[in-house]
Image (cartoon, rainbow, N blue to C red; front, side, top):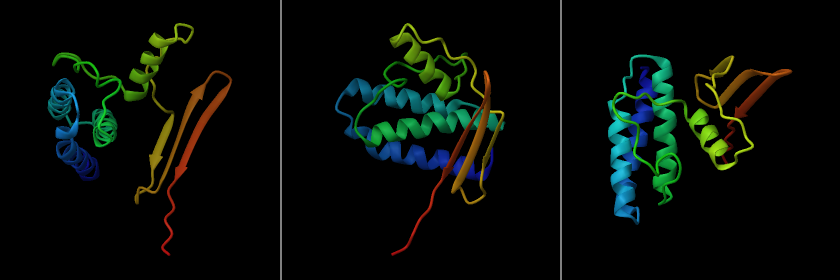
Amino acid sequence: MGTRDHQEFKNALRDIAQHAHKLNSPFDRVRCAEWVRKLTSLPDDNLEACKIRNEYAQFLRIQVCNNFLHVPFLTNPPNDTQTLVSLPERLGNWMSDEIPDLPKAGPISPVIHHRSPDGRAYVAAKQIPGGVLCYLAILTCYEI
């Protein structure tokens, strides 16, 4: 795993640890700890595994810092023999469970994805029936 990915994961864990005790429910605090244990036990030997681990860690960090847990963290993490699917696929499948008319999400992998070295720009493209879906995000900061 790259140094940047590792640092991103460590920062997310640090924020989770600082805010997890503020969760109202003791059950949520236990589930949070179980998810952190699962995420730290995942291998970090390839880029795809690191990406999945960081997606879950960042999403958990956002929820814990806002004092609530939501899907997928309302249930226990998969056991040690199961691997985590990508977060968009997991959330897509949850939505299709809640809305029966939606189809199940399959593996979601962009045709291309690239983040700029400074982390301020991201582009992804994925082939969809009839075309290509493109996503571009740019962070701009202005000093006043």
